Image (cartoon, rainbow, N blue to C red; front, side):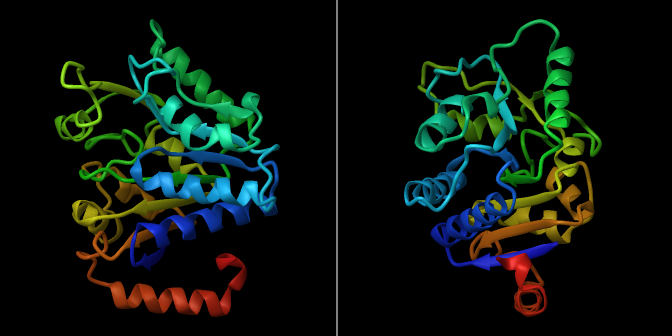
Amino acid sequence: MLVILKRDNEEISREAAQLVAGAVRKKPALTLGLATGGTMTGVYKHLVQFHKQGLLDFSQVVTFNLDEYLGLAATHPQSFHYFMHEHFFQHVNVDPRNIHIPDGTVRGNFEQYCATYEDAIRKAGGIDLQILGIGRNGHIGFNEPTSSLGSRTRLKVLSQETIDDNAKFFAPSEESPRCAITMGIGTILEAKKIILLATGAAKATAVAKSIEGPIASAVSASALQLHPEVTFIVDEQAASQLTQRDYYRRVLEMTALLTPERMS
């Protein structure tokens, strides 16, 4: 696990975008796992800039999003379909046929639909690089506390904390979604490389438990400790409860000296 400490959201966004861009340049047909949320908007902004400057080609990239709210159509302003197209897809040259986002309007056999999503990931050769955010309760994707560490893509009931956090994005007369379709923790852990971004004091407890706490289903991001190629990029506020900050800085310095290709 590599922990990169940055000053603020802008530095985090730039660092993450550079890592993604480097991965795409090394493998133009990269399979990229994507996330949504405020922390991600800056990342997509930088990736769009790289593309418009002629520095990055997404024409062969295949994408899989982590999750989608159940009951929201792709045209709903708070759907993750809408978010991705507004902030990323409509600005770059990803082939629409290579874009995969869970369908929030699916009805009926959820298990079959989710198995189909898993199968699409396998047919794409698995996810090469997965980008993650983290919830205040330590969830990744919508894998709420008590999620199985071996879980696969499935329908997940959202915790009240998550519902409350999301309510501010919906009109007072509109009910915040209660469920979502999400990749499972087991699905996420099969990605070859993982980057998790976290900003703000509200994420400090979750970040500390995920990096330095025990591996537990109560904090689904703690399962990332099991992964051999995971990088946390966190700002000063989100890192405030980490006890080994000086050590993480030393590790980063030595990693850059000894394995510069990992930092490229």
